[in-house]
Image (cartoon, rainbow, N blue to C red; front, side, top):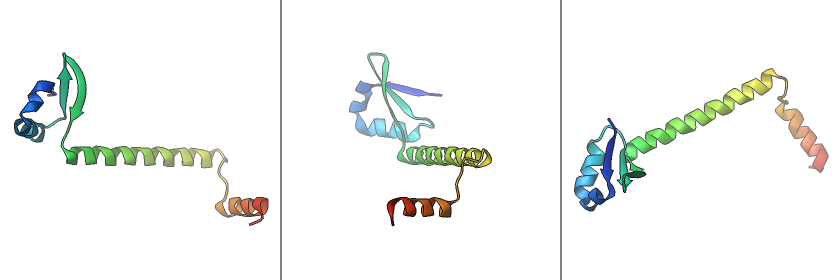
Length: 89
């Protein structure tokens, strides 16, 4: 279940930190009844970042596979040879 607290509850920093640590989900901080920001444990944030990086990588791999299947991919050695020839390297 989501946890929402008003921004004034952050004044008691030790209690707020305990709330964030004990909460199973991120804590939404509100101001005047509107969501302002979200606070989460650092290990949860690190896990979320790793999952996002993994999802981006899988998306790029899927795109590369589609391009290869569509015949849009080039051999790396041929590409390097054409670059060397073009720029006189």
